[in-house]
Image 1 (cartoon, rainbow, N blue to C red):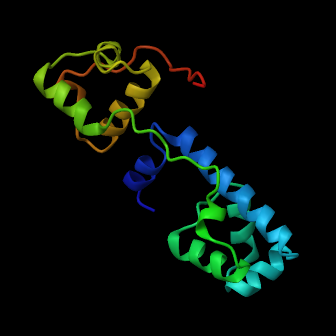
Image 2: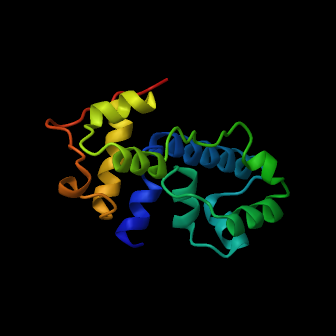
Length: 157
């Protein structure tokens, strides 16, 4: 996967996304066990490597739509059952909003961006760092001021 795509996948909502992956994996494990199947048996039925089933169940890997449809058919369950209890990650702000603010008000600090958007500092910093990594913003051109100290992330609940 190209670096840019990986950063998008594991951007500011990654902790919520990880919860979704783990929840889906737990649902798959429960439904597989209820069907009386081992990971190896399910893998053979789905024509997938057992390691892929294991990674999905552990929340390390996301199941794509074709995999979900295969699980639905091979386990005799619905996609609704596979996704029961899961909620989509909340997009609180996007790259477009941050870029717009930086273009309209050059020289904003990460703290100022966070305050203007009403978001945690670490969240806005990750968006800005992502934008910098893909060269959408360059500190010297946009006036964005990266954080002067390392960021510590606090879990939000």
